[in-house]
Image 1 (cartoon, rainbow, N blue to C red):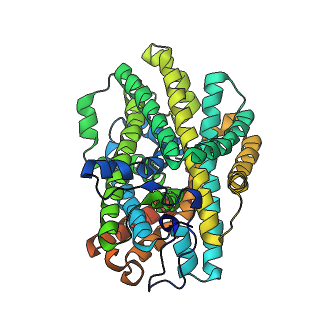
Image 2 (cartoon, rainbow, N blue to C red):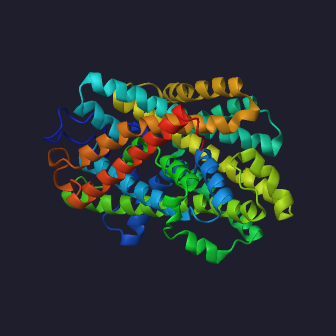
Image 3 (cartoon, one colour):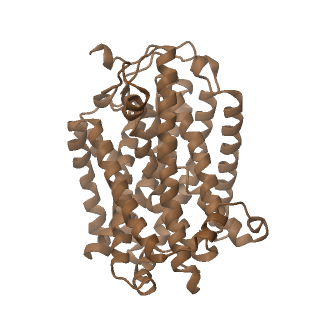
Length: 452
């Protein structure tokens, strides 16, 4: 193994040496020149944040954004902004963990906890990826159905082809994976840009919507939907994914090199997640400008939203753009979820399989439940499928967030890159809020029959 491919040595705070990194074939495969200027270094680190960002605009988020915009207009834009700030902080901790310790979150959990803790955490992480993939696969299948009238069950099977896509892209280099995802995000941006222009929203209302409103406290329905938006924002698999793919950069393993890498990796994820906010806000703005203004305040189903766009906007191209954006969101999200599955499997249980077999296994773990649930529920119950995925994610989220905050707050494990006290306090508060909101969301859906 070349020097550039060697895994980092053990730090004093860890029980064992750092094992071979996940995604070994692309580990430290992207060069970072010390002679480059700041802008070129930024470009060298740009990419992983966009792979993470697609998880924050997956089809599971579409339902809550559509419901929020149709019911309350632009008022919940502040909630979208707040949840995105939370995500930015937590993802910055993922980059800090990877660069400071040389481990992804799954590897860190395996090292820090005994088997009776780490193995259940692995099972929960796999369940979270299944739930994530459920929403993404269903979203892709819905888009294929809307665009090409492909039956939902067949569409779910077609999404399995992304295993071959990942193999081909990574065979050409990790930059190809990043380029593919960024290209899909560009298509999504164009689609929503055209739709927003056609909808002609009230821009004053949009600006006001990003400000806090006391209605969140006084209006119980608005408060509950706000909880749903926040609860559906932070995806557990993104925490594992980011802490793995940050290590594709061949930065110097010196204190100065690590600090520089952390700076640029955090900048990359912050910009990318700000872009994700624009997409989620666009969905909410579109729903507000199209459905809320005409009194359609109960639109939370993607298929129904697609059907209503043409008569309300007066143009047949609007539903097609909506479906294309959904297809790009679903496809990009399934690609990154499969990569997260690989990181989780390798990190927690250190399984080393041939590339094609490893991706096939991680893909089957996620797609088999998606196929089964799709067949059971049928095409008419896609909203229930998306809700089911959010419930499972709500249950698993604390088991990823809490270890992340714990590890990055430890000087023994992180050394000089330990998170500063203010960041640890902020992350702990965010984690507590997200956990409390997700527990409430899970409780209300389970025992009160409330649906987001």
